Amino acid sequence: MTTTAKPNRLTDIGPPHYEKFLPPMVKKNYSKWKYHESVAPGVLCHVGESGDRLYTVRAGSPRLLSIQTIRLFADLADRYSGGHLRFTSRNNVEFLLTDPDNIEPLKKDLVGAGFPVGGTGNSISNIVHTQGWIHCHSAATDASGIVKAVMDALCDRFTQQNMPAKLRIALACCLNMCGAVHCSDIAILGIHRLPPKVQTTNVPKVCEVPTLIASCPTGAIRPLTVDGKTSVEVVEEQCMYCANCFTVCPALPLNDAENDGLSIWVGGKVGNARSEPKFSKLAIPFIPNHPPRWPEVVDAVVNIVDVYAKHAHKYERMGEWIERIGWPKFFQLTGIEFTRYHIDDFKHAGLTYARSAHIKY
Ligand code: SF4
Ligand code: SF4
Image (cartoon, rainbow, N blue to C red; front, side):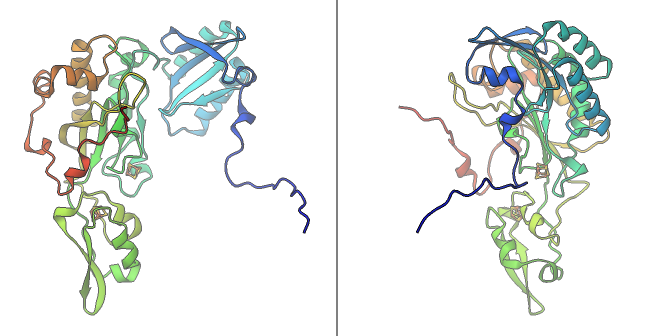
C-alpha cells in the first residue's frame, strides 16, 4: 500500500495562524527581545538584540466596541503604526509603533477621542470583565456598566503611575468567573444568594433530567417524581448558586432582583518567579445592585485602592501588603466590617483550603 501526501486542507475552522498578523518588526525580533522599558505612562519600548526599538502606546477600551470605535482604532493604526494594533487580555488597545515621532500625535488623537492613555507600570490597568446583563443568562449583575462607573472614579490611577505596584481589577458577573477574579488584586464578583426555583412540572417537558443532575458540580440536584413524571429538587445546603443547572435547563431560574448583588474580593494574583499565585479572599460579602452607576461598589473599590496606595510598600502587591499587615489590620484600615459571612463554612469548604499550584523542592 502506498501513501500519498494529502494537499493542505482548506478550512475555515479555527483562527488563522497568528504569525500572519505579526508586525514586521515583531516577526523579525521574535523571541529575540533583550529588555523593555517604561517610557511614560501608557508607553513602553521593547528593545531587540538587533537594536530595533518597538514602541507600544496603550489606551483603555470599553471592551464592547461599537463599529465606530473599531473604525477609529483602525484609522489611527493606519495613520501611526503601519496598520498594526492588538488588544490585551484586560481589554486595553495597544498600537505598535516603529517611529517614536508618532507617539505624541497618537496619544493626542486617542485622548481627544475619549480614550485615556495609561495602564502600564505601577498603575491600574483596564478592568477585565465578563458579559453582564447584556449577554449572559446567569449574570447576577452587570459587567460593563459597573466597570465604566468604577474606572471613571479611578481614571487618574490609570493615566498616572502613582500606585505602589501594578494593580489589577477584575469583574465577573457570577461565580463561574469568566473574568479572572480569583487572581486579581481587587475582584468585583456578582453573586446569587438563593438556590434555583425549580419549575417542577416544566422540568420533564423542557430538560433532560440525567444531564441536569450531572450539571451540578456539588451534587445538589436529585431526582423527584411528581405526578408520575421524573423531575428534580435542589438540596439547598449543598447549592453554591452557580447557575450551571440553569445553563442546561431553563426550568431552574435563579435570577432574583432583591437577592442578587455583588461581593468584593482582594489579594489575588498569578504566580511569578518571586512569589506563588494567590487566590483573592472575601472583603465585602454583599452590595445590592444599584444601576446605572452602582455608587456603593464604586465607593468600596476606591476606598480599598486609596488605603492600599497610602500604606503599601513600593512594589508590594495588594495580597502581599495584606499578608504583611495581617487581615485584622486590613479590615481596620479600610473600615470594612468583619462578619460571619467571612468564615468559609460551606459544606465543601475543605476542598478550598491550601490549594496552591506552586511546587517546592
Ligand atoms: Fe456568564 Fe457568569 Fe461568565 Fe458572567 S461570569 S459571563 S454570568 S458565566
Ligand atoms: Fe447545583 Fe449550581 Fe444549580 Fe446550585 S445553582 S443546584 S450548585 S448547579
